[in-house]
Image (cartoon, rainbow, N blue to C red; front, side, top):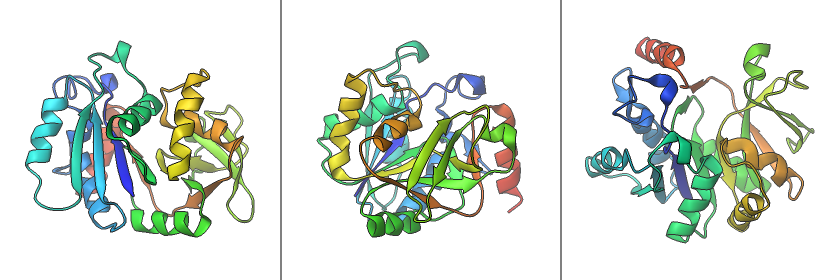
Length: 245
């Protein structure tokens, strides 16, 4: 199994903190977001290789970070060739870029480089292997305003996804979908099919509703929190919460 961490955004809502430093390398209670993700990955034996997809502006930052690593999973850093927020490939475009650039032909874990979470990736992998299908994650959100800013799913009794809403005005459930996905090897070619047909590529979850029309998808329900670091307020809140642990 391989892992792609999406880290090619420009994080303009976090300026000036991210004007000269990529968001995944911002410290949260003294440890960068990316290092916190890598700790989760290193506790997951199934993951043999990690790919960090950067943009051209920050490729040097990620390369220096990779060179400082000691042990753990093998890490490759790629630049998607973009240099501004206006010409970015988008999250789904960056997944396709990594798959094509490295010829990835394995099951693939996809993580957003600006989200932290409480669950263990090894448990998600075990669920994925039991279901033998593409899997996403979900957790319960009782705050309606937060549900209106994320993906929301409906599931059956086996946790197969039966409906998906993106940033719904009227959410049909309280199951929110963060950007953590596990795709089977045979699904990777469908990403290009989706994009070539005009599918949106910016948000990492935009591929999921299309995938649901073509293949069964299951949701791994996790307890605990997920921290989406999207602006200065959410960054400061995450820093405060992790510092208090």
